[in-house]
Image (cartoon, rainbow, N blue to C red; front, side, top):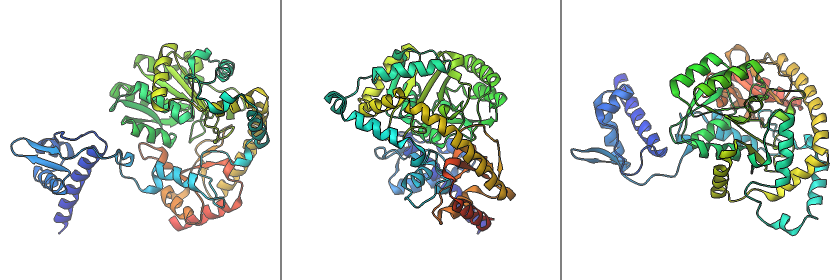
Length: 465
């Protein structure tokens, strides 16, 4: 009986593998499937197992047999299913579902696992003032498309801001986008082909993994340390996989809160140069740093580094406005891709962001935000310590704490239990391509003010134990 169940399981594994290749469009309509012996060798099963799997898939109408020629994909490609491009994970640790939990959360739900500031932490009065000012703008600013590169005055201001951080870029090297995510998407469209290898930190921001999956990239994790990526493992991955890109947060990394050290930055860029690797530096959390932080773009001068950013984490997530800073000869190609995929940027959002930057509102807001985050970080660390959670690192800035649960508790199980009481947590393996963070949770200190979140966490830990 056991042998029959094992055989059935192996057949289902082969069928699942073929379905994923078709769902991920690695096998299109009319494409020939691997030979029976070839797939058997690849998956470590018997040829008879593959035969049975192929026969069942043919009965479903997914593939068809051609006598003497083999098996072929029968129908047109199905709509792209991103969840099928990687391992089938429990929905509690699936990046798409975690995002939906936080975005769909009602006003009574607590969200210590989400990745943004609460609305009452944002400069509401300044935002309203800027929006009122925009109602008096020229008609074209209210109803016309933005220029291909984006608002010239905002790009000029961003160039000055980048210079303050040590990155030299002309306004012509800056392209405005609709968000930081759309900026990374454009860079991936510009530089990646399906199957290209991309290095990411492990753990990293979970939407990096989702976005790279959409681009059908091979994602390779490099273990994270408090000073940046493990350089030995980075060098090994570069040699073994010949990656096209490395995607990272160098200033206040998500989810760990770590910041890149100058020594690691120098050695990392040396390795990237030797391996022909482009670095995409997402600087979305850089403004949360109270003091100087290391940025790869400043070390490199935008030669091998592309820097992206936005204001969604510090100013307003409702103002969809991001940017790309890149080498001059890449800008034209990126502009063409922007026109092809979104045609134009958000002219209204660009104007409002510029008003907030120029009138001093943003600078004043950041000063208060740094102090408020520091107080929230200290309070959250104390409350978590009372429950036995240990921080992987005590960051000096930012909103995130990356903490290990006690007694080998499974973070996904704890998150499921907490969700039953309307508390959204972020379990560690959603951030880990290697699935090595099963006992970790990421906490957003700005979303941890309500003691009820910790009471629910304590009950969830007991129930999952």
